[in-house]
Image (cartoon, rainbow, N blue to C red):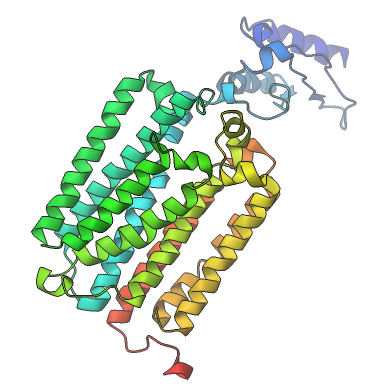
Length: 397
């Protein structure tokens, strides 16, 4: 053992940076085999957070070549990667929130599919212009939310905030409203081209919901009203608007909002609101400090996990009710039922990790997957119903 210890000392002395970052307080446990021994490392509180994993991999490779097994078992004080250890690339990815843009894709796709079911008409040009415009509006929501949360202090310690990353509140604010202007122009252009002003009214209502959710002087999200506003904006308003914008003007101007599109919009709104709800699990303490009374601040994470479970169960219960009442075709019920494992995964993940801020951060991305899968299944079911005769429950036919 003494020889091995000396060997380790010689290897480690070749690195100038290693002593800066670590202190090994205990070297060896009793060996399980004569030829091997494990090194137990306890990192000093002062240096643990500054340790870079990439540099450790280089050290580990050389040390293992000399017969010493070096395992990174403790980082910082808690044994987990701290916020200071997160790379800038990861922070940029979090700031972009690319998966969240499914909330632009799903209402449009479901609304378009519902219009195709009703009229048999689909316009690719209209679809992609609306998709680009919707993405710009969602970008405005994300950027302006970061700006206003920065103003109130909610994001003062949030490293992935766009304002904190770019270091310019004014630049982020200008970029946000430039995206809104471009997105609104695209939406208005399609509405005028299709001669459907009803759809424009719905889209304006959806944008107003987004504004009063986060922008002064309203900031209704601070009163715990974010989820209802999200439900209305992305559910009945946006999905119904996209439904009306598809097809010929002569047809869609006289087509009523059917039970099919209203039922589908309720399901879309529910899954979208679930994303927003779960996005606050990891920032309950920060919200509470600045007086942002989100539902999770009022309920606590334990009851919040129960709400998530109830919301997922309600989603599939409503799906069954809409199928039995013939509001949705059988193809939608069957395809959406295939997403049950994803719904169960969301419930289990939140129940198991609602107290762990480092893990529960991922809950909203599990909800995004459920939202996207459920939305695609719903849209595909509507499209298939147009071309199949078996679209309702035989026992009710």
